[in-house]
Image 1 (cartoon, rainbow, N blue to C red):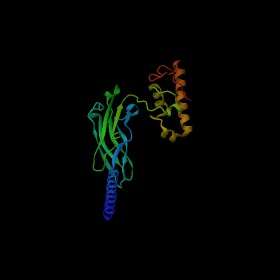
Image 2: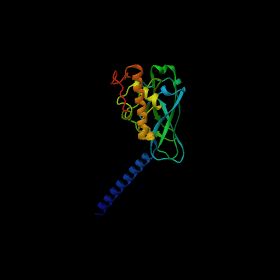
Image 3: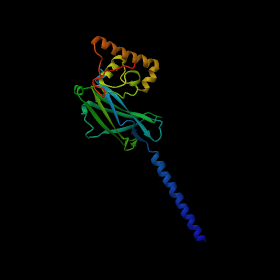
Image 4: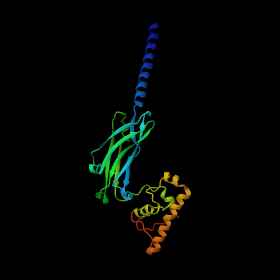
Length: 235
């Protein structure tokens, strides 16, 4: 009987020790800081940029704990079909997560060039291990940057409430000319407020109405799903 009790006690102890070791391994793994890109791709256009260079901030989020000092991460350019930019069109500056933060940025210098007047180029990047970080999740450890001198129409989500319902290059050019902005996101709306957004929409509409007076015909969408149709302002 004593042998049976001893055997049961030994088996239970082994299970507890195994679970403890497994938990230690999980905790150790979870505590390993890693980098994940917030976006799978980012686009930028020099259409509103008079300078020949632009520092693009590529946001990242970390897995693990914060630190009381600045930490740095590394990336590599993937030599695949998604990387079309030549090395003279960009410079990777640094990847940094500030002290006490769960987020940071990769800073990439994009360079303006006449070749971008008619095309766009891209850079496919992957995070790699550094002194401060390991590689992140496989589905979020890469990102792609695309840039051009041509118009890149941003997501039209909030534009449709104050400017015009449908996007096109022509509509976006009017937005650029009348507002001085390049985007209109929820952050932009919060900065100008409801009254400010309506005023911007009114300026957009006034431009279109004056265009029709001056030219005897309304301005039309020049591309997109509504190509050839009139750009109708919200205000």
